[in-house]
Image 1: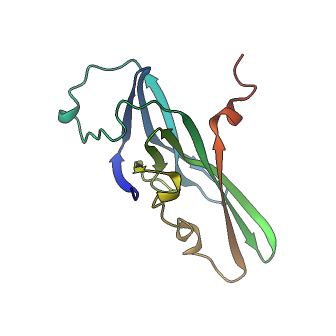
Image 2: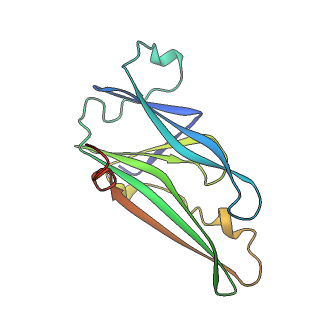
Length: 167
């Protein structure tokens, strides 16, 4: 199945047998570029399964419903700006994460590097079929002579990130 995208303003809820995972794009301010700019950070919390009448509170999608999550991968992006060959700054962000089940994957991503407070959800039969657009334009549209940007995307299994953090 090719990727199918749904967007949510504010937050998205993924119901699991262990609880409701609420994912939201939380705004923050940083001045690493030399002036204060607003960005989004993905945040998540797990709550007890809520007694919610889902159809009355927003869009509901039952893709992969009832399937066990077998793997979680974090999508980490690194953007580096060079000015006349010297590194000016590096911006690293966890842009999203991917939940893998038996019959497909669900990707939960920020809609932008910058403040949008929109969560983008994509369903596909494999990670290869995501339709993630090229986000480099968010940085390069204002580039001037001598500025170069490089982009790197890593897919990091959650187990690697959690090593040593749990007792």
